[in-house]
Amino acid sequence: MREAVAKALGSPEAASRSTPEPATAVPAPLVRDTAPPEMRGVEPRLWSAVYSPDGRTIATTAGWDNPHEPGELVLWDVASRRPRVVIRQESTIRTAAFSPDSARIALGDFAGRIVVLDAATAEVVRELPQQLKLVNSLVFSPDGQGMSVSGDRFSLAQL
Image (cartoon, rainbow, N blue to C red):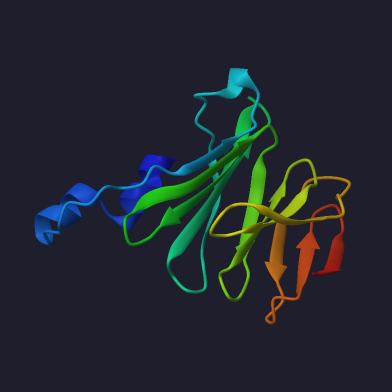
């Protein structure tokens, strides 16, 4: 999956051949891995990809239930074409959405969990009420103060 997104963003090697850039150290991505130990090293299948409104970040979501794969959210830096945040957990992460100001990202998973993160630090800002089943999609309201969620039912949340 990471290779597919990196290819879609363009190979860093190809970019450096066409437009030389000064050598700079690329920071390692922030990784938060709460997936069970037996899932370490398991590459999950891709579910979705979404651009942040400011165009600086792409978020990808991944995972599966059978065979069991870890849920994964990766925040990709578009300019460097590299991941800057990787979050892995036991449950498949089905969907993600950025707030209109690109400062927050919400994710929904197969367990029905909805979490809003700070897009820069990946710190949890808020957890919304658990859905009964998986979350299929979510979207912030235009003012960023609300969210609509669909899964086992449709709901609106005030942030």
